[in-house]
Image (tube, rainbow, N blue to C red; front, side, top):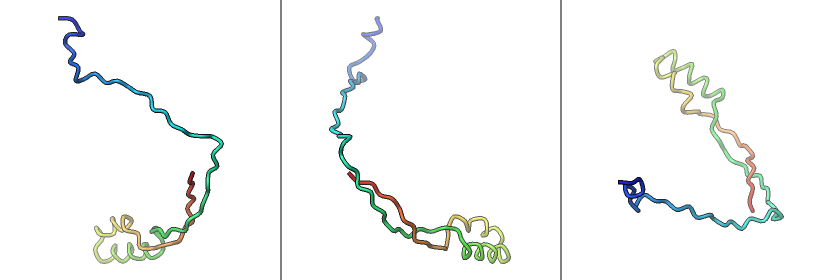
Length: 79
């Protein structure tokens, strides 16, 4: 039995190149959007210290749930 006979047609994959119409001269629009995000700050640190005094194993996971919030500008690029 030859190698070609042992391969069935189900497993043959044909690659078709994809044509994308992208113009390099097209201008990009840059925008800045204000987004509120959570971060570990002073309130989270105080909660961690409090949990360490009351029940120390709980203080190990305080960093997974940050309590502080801040507004940050994010850059958004559109075509």
